[in-house]
Image (cartoon, rainbow, N blue to C red; front, side, top):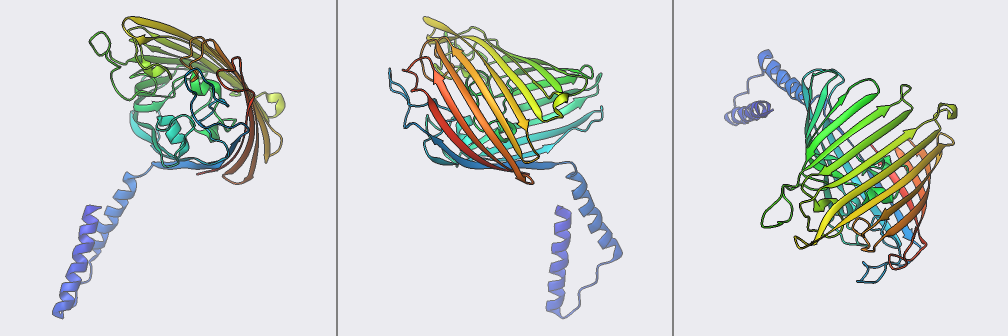
Length: 411
């Protein structure tokens, strides 16, 4: 491209100089034209296979109870902190851009990359740049950025190196890809959302594929934790998973685990000092599209169990936390235009570390109903009603109810 620009610039300059001297500029020869054409073709070939995709997600949310700030010590909020949503608020949830050079289906040595950038209120929420109950549509979040390559061993081994989303959980960061507009309790509190490191995956058979990786830790981009006992412990975690797909392709069962070797405060939403103890989260989820329903019904589940030690005044005092939860999902596509989806979930936190309330032995329940309308190509309209409960009035006032409208254009 630089040669092409230089050639055109030189031609224009020569023409200008000749005209100034009163002499006509020489016409380009067939050889000159061939060089320019070859240069243009080379540039186009170098960019072949790179794909740009994304979406714009905007809407309106309303909470039926007032809410202004985080709870004071010993106090309570008036609603459950779902997505840090304010009362009566128009939202730019996200402008999502993904640039990718995907790997082909061929089992050969090859390479590519992917980068996902998110701008909007979801970016602030996910990156932790906004406080409790605050939003900022100008926030930026780098969701993923990794190089990928395939090693032609067996059925092929695909490797990602960089920052990538987690393998845990049924729900994903992209709201339009989920069955509901709001995130569920397990997504927000029970699991990590992204990792920095490497992960390798391989399809062992037509129905079984496996994954294994070594990462800095959940939601962590750095390489060490808070100093403990006079030193820095590497913030290293191991991740792995086994996925089973039904022979007919209409059912899927995924089992995933993350094990923080030296403790990891990034696995917690609460106290920020880790001790030298392991943290582990087991996650299993599955979905099923029954053939008797003619692909109109989708059923899914998600179960999480986690345990970890954290320090309140390490190394003198340490404590531990155990959390678990389950979610059930269903969606029915009544027509090509209209669908209805529901989610019911529950989560328990023994020591108030994972659920952002600080209360001991907290139980939260949530029920969500979402209607979808696909009226125009690439444009989706969804409406939602959600209600949350808990077992302790000091956590948040119940029932906490909210409604949402979402408009998404995908490209």
